[in-house]
Length: 325
Ligand code: HSE
Image 1: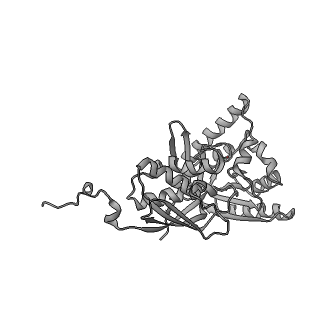
Image 2: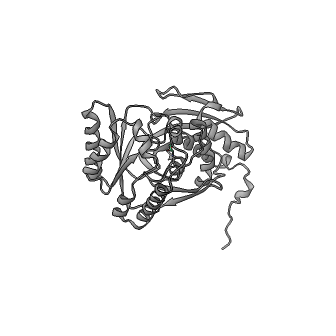
């Protein structure tokens, strides 16, 4: 029997067909570096996250509004979401305008990919409203421009998992080559001491040269971690969660870092390190029960010395940024 199919090539503007003008987007927090993988490894969390509403407008420009307590910059050239979105619109040679309202936000400077979540939310939401001209993977290059605006460096280790979910590896930046990495069930504990560390500052203190001995240790661990994730080998994952290059330098920005790390390991975590550029500290555990025990131990460590902190436990978020409504 002959069937009549709609020929989608007849629709130059797919948006008109689906009549989607406004959506709410949830974009998850992420843990970058994952100990040994500075600027190349990351994974997404279920919570916390950014929530934005995004809609098409007829003004030919990006209009921003902020309902969060953080006083976000609303000039489009200073706002990471708008910078990322503008780079996507430039690639499309599109003059489409958008209204974006920031509804809730990961605390800036917390080390769990606050600027990445905002950048990913903008490009993902606009891509949905424009009829998905890009894949999630293709959106990474645009979201990276938001990271550049925030920290001076267009790294993708937070934006890639925020957009694609799960663990991701940035195998190369030129050309950009992002690889999704499967993982066994694993739980993250993240503790956020209530101090702010700016990514730009915590990048400036890094040494620009690495002794070959340290480099060998580091790339052995990166390969071991990826192999462990692929083969569900928790012991190998644990053995590989070591950072001998960046953590020793940045640890000085986080009070009690080594005591908290030891407390997490004593409570049964597979490994523990700095989340992104800090000050948050993350640990990975095989079960949720252990991850909760680790959460208590890490929190106790900060409480003991009177440092206010927030702690949360999350499985790996496999989906990444999504339409919330
Ligand atoms: N890879 C980045 C860093 C993540 O460690 O500086 C923070 O945005």
